[in-house]
Amino acid sequence: MTGALLLALGLLLGTLLSIGPANAAPTVANAQKDVNRLRTSAAATYEAANESKIKVEKLQRETEALKKNELSVRAKRDKAQTLLAKIAIAQYKGSGFGENFSLLFSRDPTQYLADAGALEIVGRQYSTQLRSFASAQQRLVATQLIVRDRTAKLQIEQRRFNSEVASAKADLKKAENILASLKKEDRDKLAKKESARENKILSSSKLYAKNYKGDSSRGSQALKFALKQVGDIYVWAAAGPTRWDCSGLTMRAFQQAGISLPHSSRVQIGYGKPISYKALKPGDLVFFGRPISHVAIYTGGGKMVQAPRAGKRVEVVPFTLKFGAKPFVGARRL
Image (cartoon, rainbow, N blue to C red; front, side, top):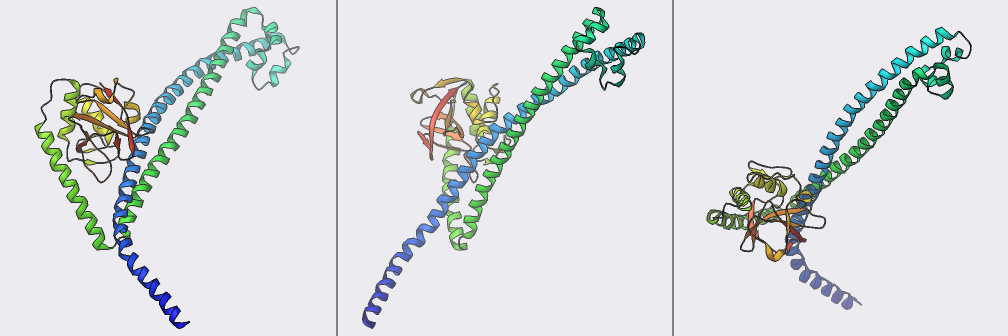
């Protein structure tokens, strides 16, 4: 019995020793993969937030305009109401207590005058004023309903925006926590590898940017601007002069070519002419993700310039039908 137990323990110990080192190495590698995944996820969520921000700003403008219109409509309604109030008082004084006695106790004389009985009392000479008041009142009610609708939509979109930003920040925080959980030597090892990898990409990107000639087309002008930003860091919602997110870079690049774009990859794809994968030319915008969460500028030669995600810089990288896990979904020529 003792011999069997010792044999079993020996086998178990041997198994643990054999799998221990194998598991230790992937832990660090998996940490880097998880960090990259979370940073990419954060960038995608931030692009969703960019779209939500545009919607929020649009709804804010519409709501403010509607509120101003409501004040104007209310002023017209109040003017008509004041006139009817004067008519009500004059009618009351001229008719004795009889049928108009209830006006004395009415909270709103104009409401009383708005019904058919009141119309008979005040006569046809006041029907125009009554119609004017009724029309103004209807416009005011309609305007108030629209304001409430826009305000509700604004609140919903604002909550969505806040949620997306919070989610992206949470992903970045998780990435930080993963790195912090590693041993210092492992963390330093990862940092060294990442630095070497990024420096290699930066070096080749700068060389490409230096040698790019281009032409006088709008796409080429935008591309030249984007290539000048190689090496600048990625920061969400940034649009220059030294920090960029993906759609902020493309927005400013085409602004230099005289083309106005919104700060959102999901909205930018609605601009320009659709271009097939095989027809791409330098200066075309290329989009990735379902839903769209990344945009870059095709440079030609099977490459593109982009501001990819947190932890990276503006770079020139190979253009493929997939940017990480995000599929290529279309291109636009402006």
